Length: 315
Figure (cartoon, rainbow, N blue to C red):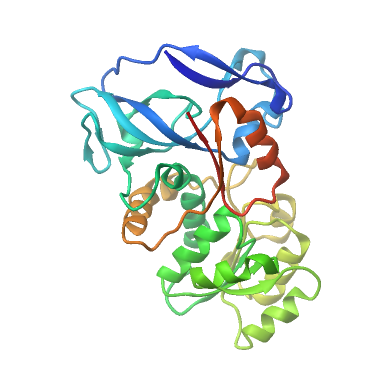
């Protein structure tokens, strides 16, 4: 039996509860994972908040799409993007269903080797922010020699976008509160404080111009400065300012109605993220690890939107 967090109803974090579920044995192409850490993401609480509707037929809702753990059981034909799996292998899973658990049954196609340089907590928070960052940078064509502004650079996706853009050979200007400027410099960005007169401050840093902008914050300052600084709106993308993004003709990415989900880009990014992490080119900043029994508290913190790293759950 596995302790599993589910949303028993629609509402706030108080609807989360733990149940015991039978897991396995694995069928064709499946693997059973002993979970060591599961990443939490805003889409998780949106699943039961009513954002996507309130169909009682979907209850209870199993939460969590990314996981790090150890292979406990495997079918003979269990092969992932990097090859077959064996009992005892350390792995990352994305996208899966029901990662908030002590043990979970997943398709082998969703599994990749865990980079040895990452802890389980770090590995459990690598994929969602990582593939989103790759999508943003790919959609805006960021490459060597470009100057790119990353709005919300201190958040989970922002930190990934900074590091991946730097690895691509781009110059990165990252907007963030002053408390995170030192950390962003460590990642290779040139930090700038968000808020009033943001456009002016970025121009002072980059008088020769800005080639692209990616927005993870969704603020008017982020969008207004992007429009003012980047000549080609095809090189501006947002995962947060959906309404303004559509109105202004910039690229809107993610799960909003009408947005580009980028499924192929995100799926293809998984192996690249594992490689970059293994080579020490990607850090995953973990804000806090909560036990499964405190999943509601983890979601309350996540919903505040002010964390500067991943919140993970551990069995």
